[in-house]
Image (cartoon, rainbow, N blue to C red):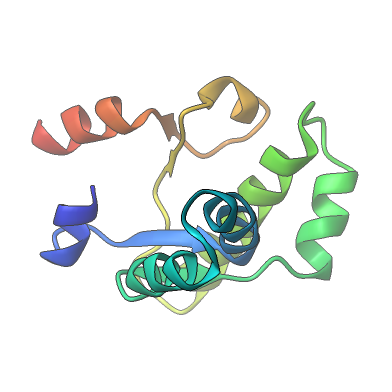
Length: 121
Protein backbone atom coordinates (compact mmCIF):
# COMPACT_ATOMS: atom_id res chain seq x y z
CA UNK A 1 0.00 0.00 0.00
CA UNK A 2 2.80 2.39 0.84
CA UNK A 3 4.44 1.86 -2.55
CA UNK A 4 1.11 2.43 -4.31
CA UNK A 5 0.67 5.67 -2.36
CA UNK A 6 4.21 6.81 -3.16
CA UNK A 7 3.48 6.10 -6.84
CA UNK A 8 0.20 8.07 -6.52
CA UNK A 9 -1.84 5.06 -7.61
CA UNK A 10 -3.87 5.21 -4.41
CA UNK A 11 -4.51 7.94 -1.88
CA UNK A 12 -4.15 7.01 1.75
CA UNK A 13 -5.74 8.83 4.65
CA UNK A 14 -4.75 8.56 8.28
CA UNK A 15 -6.40 10.15 11.28
CA UNK A 16 -4.46 12.48 13.53
CA UNK A 17 -5.26 10.04 16.36
CA UNK A 18 -3.23 7.35 14.60
CA UNK A 19 -0.14 9.54 14.64
CA UNK A 20 -0.41 9.98 18.39
CA UNK A 21 -0.85 6.25 18.94
CA UNK A 22 1.98 5.35 16.57
CA UNK A 23 4.32 7.84 18.23
CA UNK A 24 3.55 6.42 21.65
CA UNK A 25 4.46 2.89 20.50
CA UNK A 26 7.36 3.79 18.19
CA UNK A 27 9.22 5.97 20.69
CA UNK A 28 9.38 3.04 23.10
CA UNK A 29 10.79 0.77 20.40
CA UNK A 30 13.09 3.03 18.36
CA UNK A 31 13.39 6.20 20.43
CA UNK A 32 11.80 9.61 20.03
CA UNK A 33 14.01 10.96 17.22
CA UNK A 34 13.60 7.88 15.01
CA UNK A 35 9.87 7.74 15.77
CA UNK A 36 9.48 11.33 14.59
CA UNK A 37 11.50 10.58 11.45
CA UNK A 38 9.31 7.58 10.62
CA UNK A 39 6.10 9.51 11.24
CA UNK A 40 7.38 12.39 9.09
CA UNK A 41 7.93 9.92 6.24
CA UNK A 42 4.39 8.61 6.66
CA UNK A 43 2.95 12.12 6.81
CA UNK A 44 4.55 12.82 3.43
CA UNK A 45 2.47 10.13 1.70
CA UNK A 46 -0.88 10.27 3.49
CA UNK A 47 -3.57 12.87 3.94
CA UNK A 48 -4.02 13.48 7.65
CA UNK A 49 -7.64 13.80 8.71
CA UNK A 50 -8.86 15.45 11.88
CA UNK A 51 -10.49 13.92 14.89
CA UNK A 52 -12.70 16.83 15.85
CA UNK A 53 -15.67 17.41 18.17
CA UNK A 54 -18.15 16.07 15.61
CA UNK A 55 -16.07 12.90 15.23
CA UNK A 56 -15.93 12.38 19.00
CA UNK A 57 -19.66 13.03 19.45
CA UNK A 58 -20.60 10.71 16.58
CA UNK A 59 -18.35 7.99 18.04
CA UNK A 60 -19.83 8.40 21.52
CA UNK A 61 -23.37 8.01 20.18
CA UNK A 62 -22.61 5.15 17.78
CA UNK A 63 -23.28 1.44 18.06
CA UNK A 64 -19.57 0.63 17.68
CA UNK A 65 -18.31 -1.65 20.43
CA UNK A 66 -14.75 -0.27 20.18
CA UNK A 67 -14.50 3.48 20.81
CA UNK A 68 -11.13 3.84 19.07
CA UNK A 69 -12.50 2.15 15.94
CA UNK A 70 -15.52 4.44 16.11
CA UNK A 71 -13.25 7.50 16.19
CA UNK A 72 -11.34 6.22 13.16
CA UNK A 73 -14.55 5.40 11.29
CA UNK A 74 -16.27 8.74 11.91
CA UNK A 75 -13.12 10.69 11.03
CA UNK A 76 -13.05 8.82 7.69
CA UNK A 77 -16.79 9.28 7.18
CA UNK A 78 -16.56 13.01 7.83
CA UNK A 79 -13.67 13.34 5.36
CA UNK A 80 -15.57 11.31 2.76
CA UNK A 81 -18.65 13.51 3.14
CA UNK A 82 -16.60 16.71 2.84
CA UNK A 83 -14.86 15.43 -0.29
CA UNK A 84 -18.16 14.41 -1.82
CA UNK A 85 -19.63 17.87 -1.24
CA UNK A 86 -16.56 19.42 -2.88
CA UNK A 87 -16.81 16.97 -5.81
CA UNK A 88 -13.37 15.61 -4.96
CA UNK A 89 -12.17 12.04 -4.62
CA UNK A 90 -13.49 10.61 -1.39
CA UNK A 91 -12.47 7.89 1.00
CA UNK A 92 -13.85 4.69 -0.46
CA UNK A 93 -12.89 2.12 2.17
CA UNK A 94 -11.15 1.53 5.48
CA UNK A 95 -8.06 -0.68 5.56
CA UNK A 96 -7.37 -2.27 8.94
CA UNK A 97 -6.04 -5.40 10.59
CA UNK A 98 -9.26 -5.42 12.67
CA UNK A 99 -12.19 -5.40 10.20
CA UNK A 100 -14.57 -6.79 12.82
CA UNK A 101 -14.19 -3.56 14.77
CA UNK A 102 -15.88 -1.67 11.92
CA UNK A 103 -18.94 -3.92 11.51
CA UNK A 104 -21.27 -1.11 12.61
CA UNK A 105 -20.11 1.19 9.81
CA UNK A 106 -21.31 1.66 6.24
CA UNK A 107 -17.93 2.11 4.53
CA UNK A 108 -16.38 -1.06 3.06
CA UNK A 109 -13.62 -2.49 5.26
CA UNK A 110 -10.64 -4.53 4.04
CA UNK A 111 -7.59 -6.12 5.61
CA UNK A 112 -4.36 -4.97 3.92
CA UNK A 113 -4.06 -8.20 1.86
CA UNK A 114 -7.72 -8.00 0.82
CA UNK A 115 -7.29 -4.33 -0.18
CA UNK A 116 -4.29 -5.21 -2.34
CA UNK A 117 -6.27 -8.05 -3.94
CA UNK A 118 -9.20 -5.68 -4.57
CA UNK A 119 -6.89 -3.15 -6.20
CA UNK A 120 -5.42 -5.87 -8.39
CA UNK A 121 -8.81 -6.90 -9.74
